[in-house]
Image (tube, rainbow, N blue to C red; front, side, top):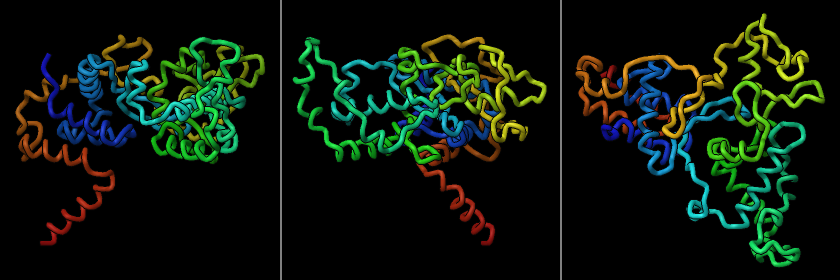
Length: 336
């Protein structure tokens, strides 16, 4: 297999240095390094690029993954560690009581009774962390032998840790001002959601942290709001619940006929660790290696490969607000 090219390295460097990127920014970066090819119209080229990256990352048990922020439906891309062992925990900047606090918040959010996927700030600060620490011998008086760092974890320390978790995007503020999961939690904890039997969405099969539930109290079916809009976008589509047959209630804005709702079935980056699922959809195009072998002058008129590479690296390093400044400079050149 050919080694990764500078194009692959640019994508990885952007994700490692800037953290998870929204789909819009990640697609813009891919377009810059591939000679203006839009992932929406060159889907197979985009998938082949990510698959090649993931085949190389698999040796390190890392993966470039995509997921959806369940609170606003935005797709993000990020690099995650697929192993959650004790050695991996050594790389965390958080202390033992801080990790225990995060685990307590995580359980409170995912088991929230209203399936809203959020808790209030007061509920977060009152989260107990004593039961998140496991004593090896398992004796009955183990609670009395908890580390002092756990028993003395103060309210001010909780508040500071909460702010850090939000800043690092493990948690987030929702549109209602409550505290929910951050995009890094959605990216990293997919395996945890499944192993802890968190109910999944009936449409996309991902954990239904923020989801709508069937109006029938005896039915446990839940569906993400963005999946509902996609599923019932056709007026003639059946609105019967798959679990009990109850008519599913309409959501606000569902009748607007919006077609740009994210497709839950296409939010996965191609992985080297698992075969593609038959439920996913894909289209065909040319592989990335073919693009690298073609004549740059035929695919990118008036640009050399070196200038294109420099421009792509610059796009990866600059903030998203760099666009207006570039247009200003070009307008100045036209005036001159």
